[in-house]
Image 1 (spheres, one colour):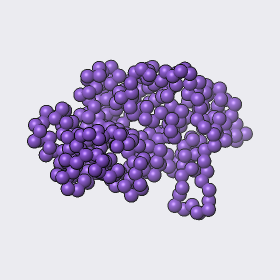
Image 2: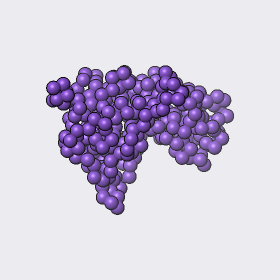
Image 3: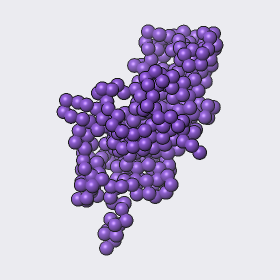
Image 4: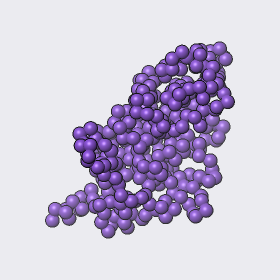
Amino acid sequence: MEPILQVKDLHVSFKVKGGEVKAVRGMNFEIGKGETVAIVGESGSGKSVTAQTVMRLIPSPPSIIKQGEILFQGQNLLKKSNKEMETIRGKDIGMIFQDPMTSLNPTIRIGKQITEVLIKHQNMSAAEAKAQAIEMLKLVGIKNAEARFNQYPHEFSGGMRQRAMIAIALACRPALLIADEPTTALDVTIQAQIMDVMKDMQQRLGTSIILITHDLGVVAGMCDRVIVMYAGEVVETGTKWEIFKNPQHPYTKGLLRSMPRLDQKKDEPLIPIIGTPPDLIKPPLGCPFAARCDHAMKICERIDPGATVFSDTHTARCWDLHPMAKEAQSS
């Protein structure tokens, strides 16, 4: 099956006073129709930059797309003009942002923020757009949708604002939805409700989803595949079961160890990943995780490891996984 989205060898940098921050370095991934793929990693790993580059939302300057391709339904988005991208955003690709309070316009009623998308991309009349907007508010679980249609964002709770964002993002039935930390500012109960809404809408519409998050609990309940990013690079990728049950990269193992578990004793401490990510103005020559890795060898600091393939879906980039490293360890 032809992937709906392919990102090939994407490099994105930012010009700053101190030089050039290489935020995304050789990103490669693809997403099939109806699939949910998570991109995980700590802050600064390049997750949101990747997502916003797909949407062409990062201003240039200061950003520079150094090389790569972003193929959406066979078309390279990096070759599209701003006007062409305006017809794709909202209609073919929707996006849920991290903070709905800053993403929603506080001076415009919620209903109008949905109807303007429908009128622009679906050529609906005002009456048709209103009916569709009210239906979308109902679909995302907002009660008394007819009255809520005329309210402003400040009259909604945090969870309701996020539901409204989902309604806006999915109003035109896009083929791809990008959700950038959609549950960050919400409590656990509301998080679960928002994830249920997204899954339900995906089943109804057949939408593919990219979920940007650092919450591995959300990943376990929502996603088919996982991409683990560190310092602008993909260090491991696999199905969620391969990542959770058989992690291979030391960084992935560190992320999983740092999470609380149900079988954990209450006085048992969490194990953090010691150290900080590298400076991406001068990224390391070798493995970017080498300075924080307990198993680092001299080669790790000098040469970037290639990908070790474990299955058709599971790869990881680590010198410790190389066949010659295993031979040395056993000798």
